[in-house]
Length: 272
Image (cartoon, rainbow, N blue to C red):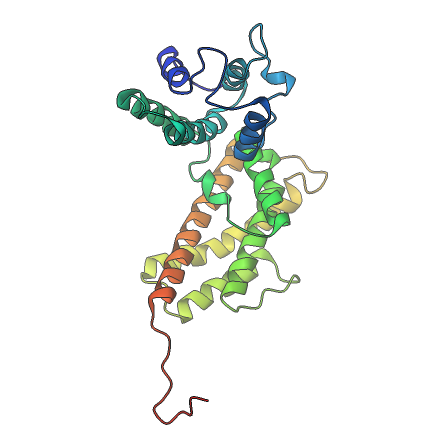
């Protein structure tokens, strides 16, 4: 259940035009599509039944009553921005700022601070399916259930980083081994600025080696006794924080590469 106060709900309902049973200008079909595309939920599932009618506004109220802070915050963020873009006149600035603050608070209240880092942009459908499964377990507050999928996600992600840097990452190599080669490649290319950063990344090699053991012996990858909630949550937060750093690093390197001038041919080169 999302932690929404009565005042927050009233502001949201005002901004989203829910007083007459509608939500913005959605039809039933477009509302269902929007919710599914945003958070992967079927808004017309019976679990969101609420009140005496099947109106879109009631279904959204049912969604608030059933889903976690993080999921509700995600949906509200997108609904609020849509409300702003479609409004014939600018919304009340005070109500708008309060609604945005509410959505942000809900998202930041998730059990994994850097969860959005695990939504890596990719054209690989298998990668996205795994990433979505990982985020689903956290949105349901079940980190211990998602450890095997988190491990698969990290393997896929680290391999993709190695491929971008021209580093061999064969499928016969374990997670910690390919991550070690990636870190070595960063160091050799001069992409790591601080010695402490290098030490942290190197320490992550042994952490990921231990993650292999957790995946094989304490997750749903096999018929195991699951790791406890608190320790599973610690692993999720550590991995998500590391992925956020690597995404930021790769973005910086890409931006630097784009701004560097293309090599010019030598004066004695034949241009044809």
